[in-house]
Amino acid sequence: MQSAIIAGIGHTEFGRLPERTAFDLEVEASKRAIEDAGLTPDDVDGLITDPGPAQGILDGITPHYLALGQYLGLDPAYTGSDILGGASSIAIIQRAVLAIEAGLCSVCLCVYGDSALSTPGSYSYGRGDDAAFGLFGAVGIHALAAQRHMHKWGTRPEQLAEVAIAARKHAAQTPHAQNQRPLTLEQYLADKYIAQPLRRADCCLMSDGAAAVIVTCPDRAADLRQSPVRILGHGQASSLSTWASTDHFDTLPAARCGPQTLARAGLTPNDIDLVMLYDCFTIVVLMQLEDYGFCKKGEAGAFVEGGRIGPSGSLPVNTSGGLLAEGYGGGMLHVIEAVRQLRGVAEQRQIKTVQTALVSGHGLGMNTHATLVLGK
Amino acid sequence: MSTNSQNSYPLPQPTGFTKKFWDACQDKVLTVYACKNCDHTFLPGGPACPQCWSPDLVSQPVSGLGTVFSFVVYQRTYHPAIPAPYVVALIELEEGPKLISNIIGCAPKDVEIGMSVRVHFETKDGFLLPRFTPLNPDNKSEG
Image (tube, rainbow over all chains, first blue to last red; front, side):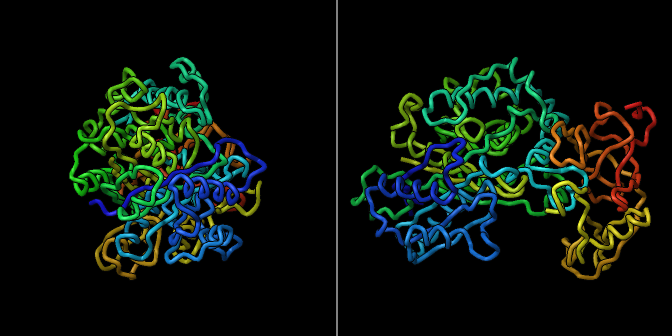
């Protein structure tokens, strides 16, 4: 599949930005992405958005894409939002590819933005009627999964710590990263629990910030400022029956999405040079390493030991620090880092021989998943 | 969101799909939904059987016995009416369906996956909620 390319990337600063709204951040990220591509707003004929936790509907009626399109002054040929939680950023890029392949548009702006850090409580929601039992936030669901993983496979806190420590080490090489403070194993083990067995350091950041990419068709390549990054494959899988399915906490939909997407790209896990995994909680990185086939089921804890996924490890994961340390970019920052690495402009983070990258998205508790495979 | 206001207890908000389950709880009876077409039992309730899509459903009392499928000890308070620490567990009922609840009647450190539990109804703001206690007295402690 060589049907679409990523031509432009852009993002704002990430952190606590109380003077900014999600929309003005999204406008800034969009502007940066279109400039990076060497195109102009007039070239944009597609707009697809990841509306973040707002679920896409503002003031009871206005969908997110409509409001953003109005602010950007766009009259797109194709538009919409996707609401797959943390899988949305990849889902909207996937939809852009499909729209471009179908000839519905030719330059599609894909945007994520949020002001979660300056909007108290936006991720502390009760989960429907289960709030009566105290099931709040995304952390509880992931703690249930972590407890299962520890019970079933003997995974230890020191192995979860490897993921958190690697993220901070990567972030230390990322100038815009929100959390560049070093983390030691001792600090990790002394960190307070949020939802045991998950500690504060197992949980991703909340951020104010926005990120955008431009997806276009290969025949626009001559117009572009940057060398294009090819979209080699894309996929989705979901588990909407949640814990009614017997393996809900033992296997992510990634176990279906990953192999299928890699097969469509004609690749295997061994062919992937850069791995960018959605990391809302450390446990999800371990589960994805297994479900994508980078290691065997149940062995991810041992697999990440010794700094294997850190900056100097044999399989660097989330080279910009990810949601755990770079900033909560809804997954779009993962895509942007993969593009930078493939362009060869990741500065001190640059991986020497990167020809292919895999990016994942995981959302809505553990229900949705999406995969993007990129290449030079 | 099932919270009515910032501080009141976040009680369930029964809908047409879940009312039979919560109504039975008010009589201290734990029930699951059963499909008259294919005998599948499930939770939570919905408009049809998620296995065969038949709308012909009945509410069926169960033993109230189950095991802990997984659990989490909340150490951060998210709602003022539910102070940490507390144990949220996914209970696998003897009859098959799973539901989110709490483990009470033992210290959080004594909860483990696979532990046998029994339903115990507790009142919150006049509403009976199904919680679970260890079946084996060895798991009970002063905590």
